[in-house]
Length: 282
Image (tube, rainbow, N blue to C red; front, side, top):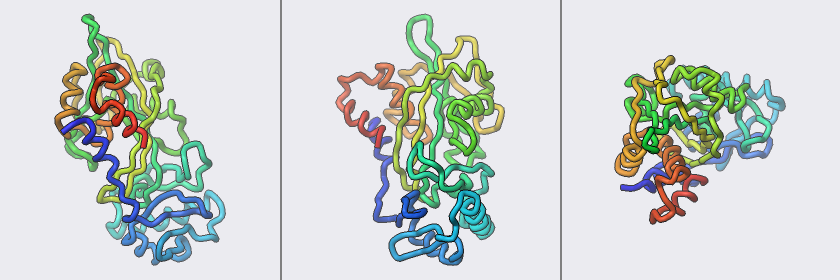
């Protein structure tokens, strides 16, 4: 296998498997026909056609849309048609920087193929010999997504009501006990995107990437139960794991590939260099 296999795994979207989900004519998601058929039971909230799903025209403002959809999602949860409730809302937008039409429970976002955003922080240490070590987490065995798999030091979805940096600070505290004064040193390095089909629906996700150079004597400690343990490994070993295995959570591979390119670990001479650059920004 190769680095490119992770790009392919996260970009397996076949548009013919989904119907557009629209609000006032704006396409905000994509829904499998089986899910769309279930939404016919809620005609006051969704208008389901043969080839698309629209939010009902009578829902004309942010709050009414949010409350109506939330009612449907709670019923679908009660009927075991959704993953466990996360009690965290995401904005429903046509694209990044656009005004949100309404907000939706995080667990339902893939079911409706709604665009999601998140922050991923590469924690690293410069060794005395000039090399780089990275801090890597292993997800807890009780995680509903990718249990026991390797993960970035800190990562989290972007909820309603927080700026990107506010979310970086929050996630750093929860996942690695990084104090705010260190968390705010995180340097924005761009974003990567992908569109991935899963059993739960579609993930057209964008991840905002940050690099955080940590003191040599700092050790992250998890506070919210998501990470079971942390490891500090040479970046070359992490590159080997990504290149040869699927040990990391699926989207973390892309974040690490981006880091490896930017820090010269994957050099321009690599035969897949241009394909990797293009693949990170679908």
